[in-house]
Length: 552
Image 1 (cartoon, one colour):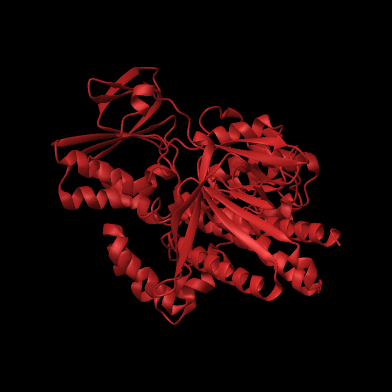
Image 2: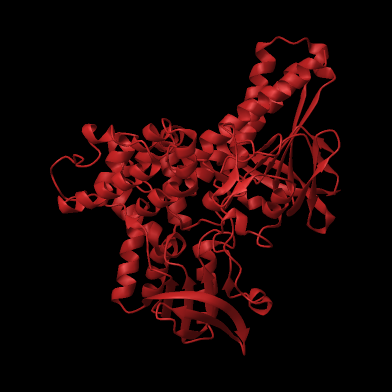
């Protein structure tokens, strides 16, 4: 089976690439007035590969199943423009309310009490500082995917061309180069499942998938885009521990907060006290805490939470100061800007600005909002020479990100309340090993004083963060396979050109977080991956059109 293009991963990256590719192809076909007889001899096959169909189209980050209690780390004013327009529609606001009432848990109820009035305000500006549930992106993308499929159906009727989209359920484990500049894809158990689908038009425009037929390992494609989301964390558990249902290795992939609460509920029926160990102190931990705090409080559960990291560095609360004055920069002002011509100077200037903001009774979020509004980082980046761009992408991007990461304020509030109530205990420790002995998960760690520590736990959650690409071995077979193909990498990710084509692999694209320099503008991740995927779609659509045209 030969595909013109395959999207590996059925989340936002894959579906946006699919939408953009097909839309651009249709536009080119229509505008070039190619004779009808050409179409009769042309079949164009697109594919989407996803091991868990429930991830389509939101993926792990925005899907209902994996992000039920997840909220954006950024407010509406930093969201994609088209998504913002979508949420401004009253029908979609009601969709959000219905979702939170049915599936939002305790945090959803609290959110509605605080924000429902602002949500339905006639003044659109009142939406700017709202932090929305991430699952809304899933609903938005699903409606757009349905529209695409309806458009393809209509186009096929009128033109006699056959544009076909196949959804394939399977765990991809390897990609190899094949004859005639093709790639061959290999799946776990040497097969994948083709999915059929129905579009439910009665309620929300929704796609319902069903198993159609099995396909053996004979999937070839002339181009592919990789949308696998974040890399997995390092695997430090023994094989015994890995098999234990209460060891959560990849927090987001396994169902994040909803999955964790199911495990706690399960244990609460047989245990009076539950001990949970979180490996990590940043985004993964924080995301789980608002719903977890309410759940423990309301259910009156005896839960002991331990979390650890090397330095207990966390993420800042996205909270403005109460300073009535307008924030004005002290470091990043016009006279000083002329002096910045290296990535190091940019980092030092931003760092100094954040420190100065606190001295002047502002929060660092005030300073960061100013930097974003003025698009300061990208203005410098685009004028850097190639050597400085490399330094920024390889080193200073992550350093700037570490000091300018902000999160939904409710997560910080929940953490502080859990600490205050002696439920959450933060430790400066590095976890070295996780084992399963005598019906207990055993966490072995070393403290910052080089003291060895051992904890008997009921649940262990790995939220230590994604591995660097060059460190990945068995944690992701697909990523390891791409590396073996000859893709060029640095620790910060795969090296891609301005079109997000991986260096060393023709017609293989990577628009997301696994690619080095995927977000030079330092926009929100959702903005970056949508923009990059759209660009790839334009390239793919035009390339396929050119191939069709060359036949005649």
